[in-house]
Length: 102
Image 1 (cartoon, one colour):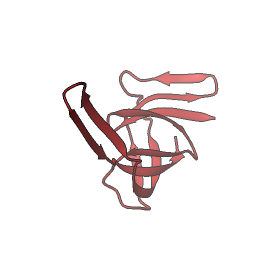
Image 2 (cartoon, rainbow, N blue to C red):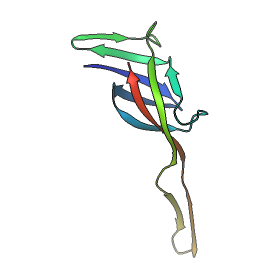
Image 3 (cartoon, rainbow, N blue to C red):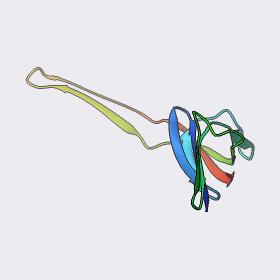
C-alpha cells in the first residue's frame, strides 16, 4: 500500500489513499480538489523515496469534504497565592480532506 508524508500548515501528515484527515484551514471550497507538492517521503511496499527536502515529481491529491472547527482548547493561567487566574479558549478552523491519490 502506497503512503506519503507531506507538509501543510506547518505540520506533517502520513497518509495513504482513502484516508480522511483534518488539516489547518485551506482556502478551498467544499468539493474542490487540492494538490500538495511538498512531499517529504513516499513509500510503496519495500521501496522508500526520501526527499532532500522534497521528493521530485511526487504529489498528494485530496478532495475537500468540509470546513469545520476543532474541539475547544482551554488555556488556563494561574499564579499561586496571588489570586490571579485567567481562562481563555479558542477553536481552530480546520479543513477535512479525503486523500484520493498518493
